[in-house]
Image: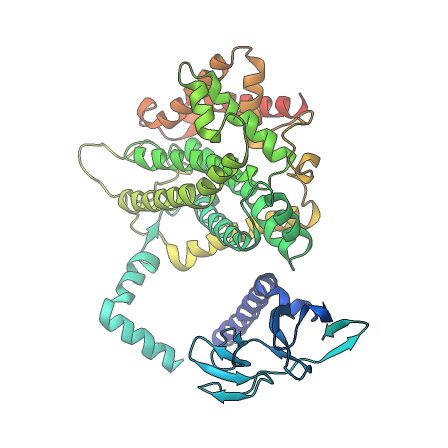
Length: 139
Length: 367
């Protein structure tokens, strides 16, 4: 083995060792900094049915993000993500117009989360829920 | 590789980077008889960087509020992934850094490297030593445990012995009559902002002075061991024919850092609670003083001195005198000789002082 081969071999060993040390330091630091929401599975949220009157909306925290439950004028319920699909602001419920407005760039959504005006590219994602014994269970 | 070379050429063309690298790395020559003790400076830089990094990471989850501090530290230790590792790195690292700092100072002391023209190097180093003690003391309170609370009560109370202004000084330090939430706010600000900035600035000054005076030649393995500096004009101590800093001595530094890390990781993984008495795991209770509250190992000699002298003022004055003597040593010990065996008075005093310090620390530990 000549000197240049030895040099290359040692260089590769050193680089390998360096990569191992970097991984041994980097992985704990990455895990330490990783957001808590990605570590925890999304739990269920229970809201009493009587808390939401007809034509009203209730905002709550769900899976580390914001969500909203709407009881439409016809009495049916909808659970949606409250995060605007344009740039991530939280939409506001406009009771008089029975729709959602995103105050950041004037995006409008219907009570079902469908885009009716403005820049949002997609409707608000729907969240599954069930109603039993006077309680609404979201998730 | 060619892309990297192109980038390097591009930078070099603009700022002459290769010239700086040559001057500061391969062209920076060190004495041929340089020894491993000279690596302790690099070890300390590394240890300080590790403290800064782990400290910044702890700041993400730590809450400097008396009602939440202990809970937040428990949360870091038990719930945040690898939180225990980051916290233990910071706690063990602080103790190891003090140990490395003491060894660095001892090596400078025994090799007479503090002598003319390096008085300022010693002085900045000594201030760094007191700042490291300060950052350790302020950091000790932050977990808001029984140990933190009562060790800080005792430490801040020492200032009471200073005539006239003592009681006001204690109140000023604590932000109130007793240690409490205002003390935590003050100590937190000192620990994470004021003292680290001071340490960083002084490290800069210390390195600048090192660059301006040049590395001192060790007094070992040489016929002529007296100080070459006459002191009549500025003189940079160069070492023609010496060994280059890079790659030769950089590898020595790397080896010293590896040994330091081996000791550090050995404590971290095999005896992580070496520096944690049981009171460190109990939340602070201002109404219950635990028995036998003691400071960190490097303050045990100070603690025992205060216990020996019934008059607190005498105990404090003695410590102050010893610290002042050490700080001003280059201006007191002005003889040209640097070899420790050719300085019997120095050797007797320093070994005696060291044994006294160790003896007081052991006595303090078992008292």
